[in-house]
Length: 159
Image 1 (cartoon, rainbow, N blue to C red):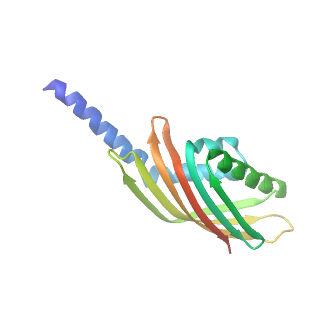
Image 2 (spheres, helix red, strand yellow):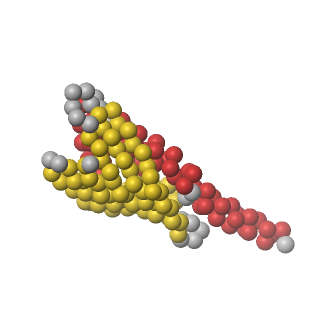
Image 3 (spheres, rainbow, N blue to C red):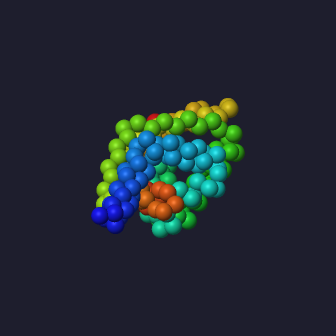
C-alpha cells in the first residue's frame, strides 16, 4: 500500500503545481514584471519567451502601421527598438491590465491561454501624450524552469 501512496502523492503534487503556476494570481505579477523589463530595455525580457515562440503583432498608429510576424528574433528586435525609442525620449510609461481571462488546459494543466486588454500611456517632456490600447493573447506553457510564452498575438491602436 505504501508503494501506491508515493506515486499518487507525486501526481497530486504535479497537478497542484500546474494549477498554482498557471493561476492568475501567479501570472499577473509575472506579466507586470515582464512589462517593466520591456519598457526599461532590459535584455532579459526576451527570456520570458520560448525559443520557438510564434509572434503576430499589429500596431495601428496615427503615423502608420507596424507589423511583427515571426519568432523570437523578430520579437526581441521589436522590443529592443521600442525600448530604445522610449529611452531616447526619456519617456514615462504607465501600463495597466483589464479584462483578464485565463483558461488552463492540457493535463495536468501544462498550458494556458491568457488574454487581456492593456492600456499604455506614454509621456515625455515637450511631447504630446500617447495612449495605446491593445488586446493581447498569450499561449503559456509550463516548463521545468517556469512559464514561457509559446505564442503571442497582439492588436493595438493609438487612441
